[in-house]
Amino acid sequence: MNNITRTLTAILANTALVWGWCEQEPDANGLVILDATWTKVPVQAFLVCAKLKKVVIPQGVTEFLNSAFYESGLEVIEFDAGSKLETIDNYAFKKCVKLKKVVIPQGVKEILYGAFDSSGLKVIEFEVNSQLEIIDEYAFSGTSIVSIVIPQGVTSFDANKVFGGTPCDDKNVFKPGNTVVNCEIIATTPSPTSMPTTAAPTTAVPTTMAPTEVKDTCVNLKKRKCKNKCVFSKRQRQCLPKKYSFEHNCAQYEGETPCLEVKVCKFPDGKCVHRCDGKSAQRCRKHKFCNLDKVVNPCFGCHLVTACGPRR
Image (cartoon, rainbow, N blue to C red; front, side, top):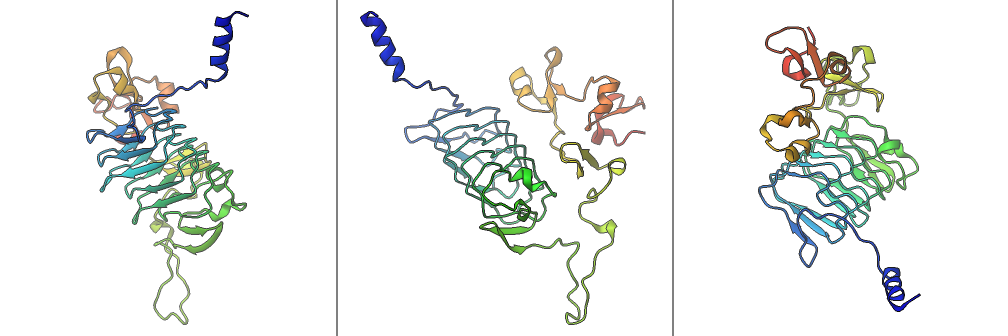
């Protein structure tokens, strides 16, 4: 072995392979302040960005897209006042092991599949009057969460999947409306549709509203009756309210890159269109958010269910 070979071997033996992507380069302290013009954090924007320690999110950002901060060095997330954030997409903060605490803005409606999976989360808080509706599977799995106040408006979920791998042995303590401290339920927030009456408290029996007044009209519906404003989730094996994040004006994007950053858009023939557009009859019927209408006007062909109503 000559001297050059020995030198290269020594260098390689003491060098760690580092890769990643930082959409915006952090400063010397690891801080990134996103520009006020941002409306979403793109797919894999800070994928394995080890230098990132703190990010400040401007008011106008509405979405963290797929894997936005995946396995980055992120430690602190700070939101500007009046945050308009609505969606935290799949794997957005997965494997962010230095991230210990997050305060979710009031307007967030969905935390999707594996959003904080295997992160370092110990504390997660929701702002007052949280509008959260959906916590998807594995959203907090593999974290260190033992205490949480789950907003009452969240659709029921499988706690063994959402909180799988967390320290609490009994995952069933994690239910909508529950205040959990150190793996124990210390308070519950009753549904406003099933609260007991307050008249004559010494003799009155709690009343139950008629089924037609239940807040979630899709709850407990069988698959064959799960229609109109409801959709049957094969993954969660239950009837759920339709999400409207799939409604999007894809035509507003001129380039391929911004078009494909939106999960419901596609870019055939140099034009950005919705994924329902142009599907064959067979594939259209299989897609739960698309509908094949035989009426020529106004909705001919494959289109969004909500755009033209249910199949005639």
